[in-house]
Image 1: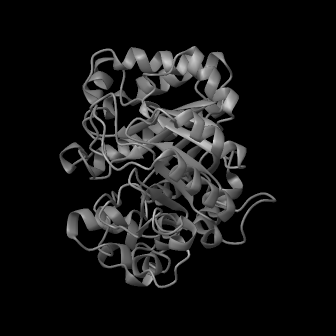
Image 2: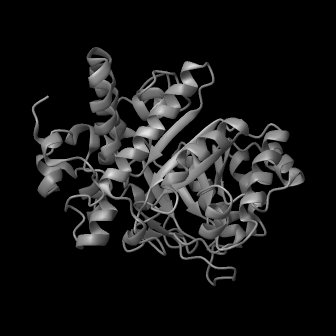
Image 3: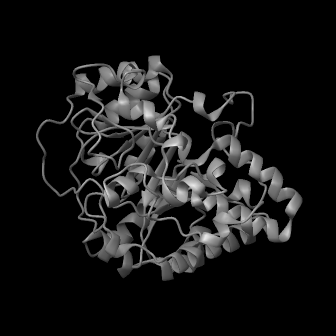
Amino acid sequence: MVNITKLYCGAAQPADELRYGHGERAARTAAERKPVVVWNCTRTCNLRCVHCYSDSFAQRYPGELTTDEAKAMLDDLAAFGVPAVLFSGGEPLTRPDVLELMQYAVDRGLRVTLSTNGTLIDESLARELKRIGLRYVGISLDGIGATNDHFRGKTGAFDAAVRGFQACRAVGQKVGLRLTLTRRNCLDLHEIFDFIESEQIPRACFYHLVYTGRGNRADELSPADVRRAMDIILERTEALVAKGDPREILTVDNHADHAYLYLKLRERNPARAEAVYQWMKWNGGGAYSSGVGIANIDWLGDVHPDQFWRDARLGNVRERPFSAIWSDPEQPLLRQLRNRLPLLKGRCARCRFLEICGGSFRVRAWQVYGDPWAPDPACYLTDEEIAKTI
């Protein structure tokens, strides 16, 4: 994650110690961090999103972890000291025991967040989520009105999600917006920021598309459109901070954003840009993401380097604890991901921003080229930008 509010605008943000090494709880290096674990607790979903990375439908899928198996997994994650567990799906709120499991995780000292489409949240459920002690509820919204409904495959999904936002805010549950940038919604970004302001949403994450499940390159923005989207995100975030109404605004799944943000900062404040560069360098970008700072356990208990890399099965928590799988020095892909920079090829290998981008998102290279060390096809920087001397 790239925290725009912190890096571009200089406002202190939650999780600074995790992302940029600031604070008493910060690790000495980003490479030493335990992973945030995304648990796809179910594949079932009540909607049919066009870019769903888990290819989910409104049906039950066989083989999902049982309640007891899930609790054993959560016990292991707590003992291992992971910084957070994200309950995801499918739609996690369709899992009958999800509230019990979230409470179980919180009781064991885990920081628990929820990723949801928001359509099932009313005030009663929001109150229960607040009582359990969730740190954060992220609601996916991929456009305003009919744009979102088209994404979700259901008329009325936008209005239902808005009610979910409002229910969480009414009971004091921290809630945020999650949006995947595609050709279908990039023109809605100003409206999305207007919505964030009008609904007083404190956090928003803008995800770059990953080609997994039903997500595919046909929906991907062109490099020029990515830059326009980034400019809007930077402009609107800066405007919020300038009027004393800062929000936690982040971009996700493309660490070329570090380089783009740095170049923008250098045009206006070279001294501050160099300080921010050092924070980005500590973070390491993609070099400390998949297989290091992020991990995935899917509905079957299979462990992956991240939630998009279904082809890379590292083990299964039914057969071996996550902590043992993740700590195994003989696991070849994990060993490579944790020292990936010498393995990178092409534009990534010769990029002057390698130490802050870290080769970005390796799964996209695998999905397009069948080679995890090939250049990230979603890089939107020009050859001239990556070749110039700092």
